[in-house]
Amino acid sequence: MSFTSEYLAGVYETVCKRNPGEPEFQQAVREVLESLEPVVAADPSIAETGVIDRIVEPERFIIFRVSWVDDNGKVQVNRGFRVQFNSAIGPYKGGLRLHPSVNASVIKFLGFEQIFKNSLTGLPIGGGKGGSDFDPKGKSDGEIMRFCQSFMTELSKHIGADTDVPAGDIGVGAREIGFLYGQYKRLRNEFTGVLTGKGLTYGGSLARTEATGYGVCYFAEEMLKVMKNTDFGGKTVVISGSGNVALYALQKATALGAKVVTLSDSNGYVYDPNGIDFDIARQIKEVERGRISEYAKRVPTAEYHDGCRGIWSVKCDIALPCATQNEINGDEAEMLVKNGCIAVAEGANMPSTPEAIEKFQTAGVLFGPAKAANAGGVATSALEMSQNSMRYSWSFDEVDSKLHDIMVGIFHNAYDAAAKYGCDGNLVVGANIAGFTKVANAMIAQGVCY
Ligand code: NDP
Ligand code: 2IT
Image 1 (cartoon, rainbow, N blue to C red):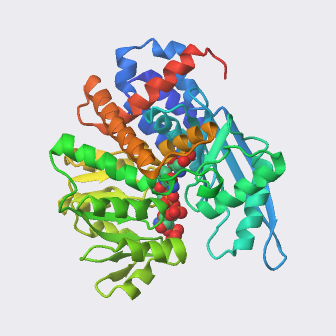
Image 2: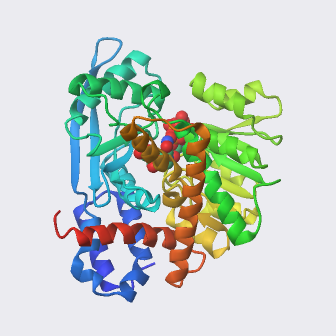
């Protein structure tokens, strides 16, 4: 698709010139700008505020060296990042990703998406993201700790409970948040809610571990109910990934009456026609930190297939991609459509390529975009921040019930915004417009300050 608005075309051209060789960031910006066409058409004066020109440029981007000593006494060097993208509606908020594929483009795409996602939650959080090209796979606990301590030694200069509050993402879970938190506290001598996803003994929130996966299912449940008058009951579900988001999406989809037949990692996928057993999968992935191939060794009805992309050829009613960006391309989307898939809700960030989204939407497949469908994780992080401020903890059911209401609210916010701008049922457009509007209004009200 090319832009109808010359103004938006110009903004996109500037972004591409300013961020050359950053395909993921350009892809994320392009999708949002395309969604804003009806907003600009309805109110061309928005160009004069410069708000769209400003929102695509990070407020601050920090890049730093992270050196640490491995178990053999050898010095290792990684690169650390934190993008503080937008603070119009609250302190910067977003996860930290540790994966060898992390670079400036990946961090900026994630930080940009986070602005709109966080706005959609209805809670006062700005957009940020960070991480490193450090590969946690095969590292000892000691190596992970030394890396995290070195990473936080620099990051601590830039964050704070009212400034920027990081959390987990790929490769960052409870263990890493613990090491990061310990180092921050040691450097600052401050017990404060500077990170979320903390352990329950030191300020963490009940249900944060489950929140992203549960949230995807709550969002999908509302989308199925409102747009197709159906639910998860009796449906076959394909879930990709086998990390934090995938595992808890599996648990909730199963509880809602669906049969989840797959999980994957970057090496391959498992298929179990009887439905994947949550307890066994969690034991292998969360407790033993093993590979998903292990599942097929323990469960006789399951088969393991080498190569993760074959997962999209598995016949299903609902697909929940929960691994990584661009994991479903146009051909794979077409396969899902041909096999009768009726709904896709994105647990991962930007897992569908633009071609895949187009295939889903053209075929009438319900499509819940990441920034709406996976916002439950960061929403619950914001609930953790509230609990830390109050020095109080809510029960699991209290947090889960707020999460449920937030996800239902996000669906309706996106659905209504799409309808208002004549794009009925297009939740990509709806989520982008609804997320944008709140941030843009705050930026305009605060003047040209960045
Ligand atoms: P985890 O590290 O817990 O799990 C990541 C999973 O994705 C693993 O199974 C991993 O397999 C797989 N994966 C990672 N990279 C690739 C790749 N290049 N190709 C294929 N598979 C891959 O991360 P999360 O579950 O936390 O995150 C999953 C997705 O959800 C990410 O896109 C993240 O940004 C998003 N997300 C996470 C939230 C959270 O609260 N944690 C909130 C909102 C979104 P392997 O072990 O082989 O690498
Ligand atoms: O992509 C995301 O929303 C996350 N990784 C969660 C961020 C957070 O601050 O909880």
